[in-house]
Image (tube, rainbow, N blue to C red; front, top):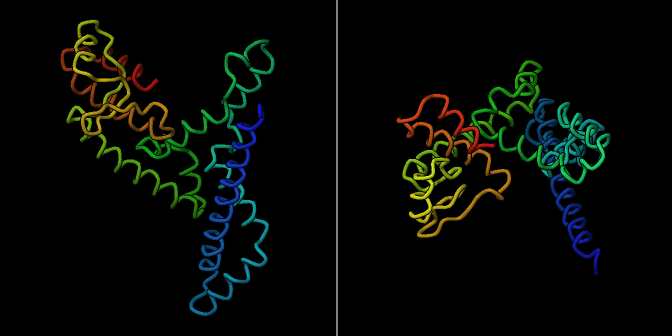
Amino acid sequence: VIRSPGTAMEAADSMGSAINYRAALNAGIVRQARKEGNRGQALVERIAELKVSPTETLIKEAATTAEYRLFRQEPGTITSWILAGRQKVPGLQLVIPFVRTPVNLLKFGLERSPVGVVNPSLWRNLAAKNPEASDQIARVFLGSRVAALVAWYAGQGKITGAAPTNKAERDRFYREGKLPYALKIGPVWVQYQRMEPLNQPLAMVAAAVDAIRAKDKTASERVQQAVYTIG
């Protein structure tokens, strides 16, 4: 009974991994067959052939994509440094029990925002003419369009970031029935902090709108409020 929640989560994780792996593999197979110049019946036959005997590269790329979609990809330099430090410092595992998944969730959200344009891997893939670049560009544009819609919604006062740090402003914030990190759906405020990875773009847009509205504050105060909201 004690292990039931963990067992259920592991089963759901395995099912999600299998679904994402198969989807990524099929997409890779079609892309590879088209890249080879096949058309018509030749394309159908090549796809069928690759489904029966996928190449090692296709298998590896599909596995990597499945890990990415489940937020389990291998840690980068900074994440590895944090993980190594957690192992060396006694008690740090209790303070920072989870690292890889939260960091990957953060990356996932940033890649689907205007910030994704400065992602080094995007430019490396463009230079190498890697098909993955098209997916990365699509994520940026889709995420940015959603961010524009969110910005309009925030401009209507229906999305909030962190509660104001000023006491008078904070009291008015709560008197109006608002909640920090929330969006208004009908008459109800719903907090989005746990809506990973959508919380990052929502928080960034809310921070930007708040900074624009804060005309009575200095530039440093606006930056401080934005960092407080996103962080």
